[in-house]
Length: 201
Image 1: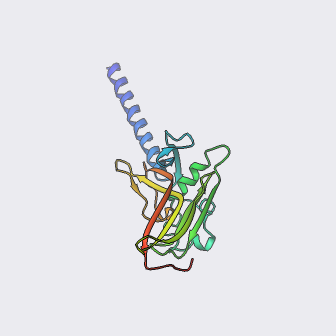
Image 2 (image 1 turned 90 degrees about the vertical axis):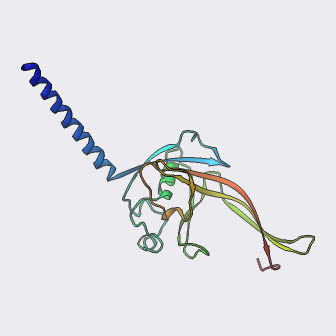
Image 3 (image 1 turned 45 degrees about the vertical axis):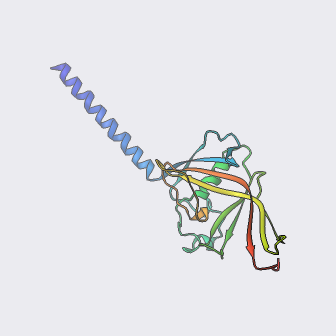
């Protein structure tokens, strides 16, 4: 009988412990979203991120964290539709701060994009800086072409259990979700397209 009671007591203790652990986890999950960030160049890991960096982010953050916005931009539902919710951009910036010294980050805000919605973006990280050179030329057949040559950063996001897709809008507009993996890639590009004739640069 005593052995039976001890077993019952032990089972009760285990159940209570499990419930407590689940409660703590649930509580943590309501305040923090855990994601991974990897930095790459032309698809190859840089800065020792063959194993992505674990980045716990507060689900709700303040203007102090979203300091790439002014106060007015932060409070604008058009420019910052996430409000206090943490974004892909916030996780990337947080990852740069795990290095000693921190990787310098240059950001910008596009208030009137030619396509899509306003938002903030990352221009430079560390020594990897974005640039663009535009030129126009006429080929041997008399066709005019526009050409952009440069380099820049692009984000690729893999949701938990999903597949990697490229970010289709400014990173400040993309909300974080538990288990997201973010690959931030620096790559060169060379785009050409037909134009009707020379334009004013």
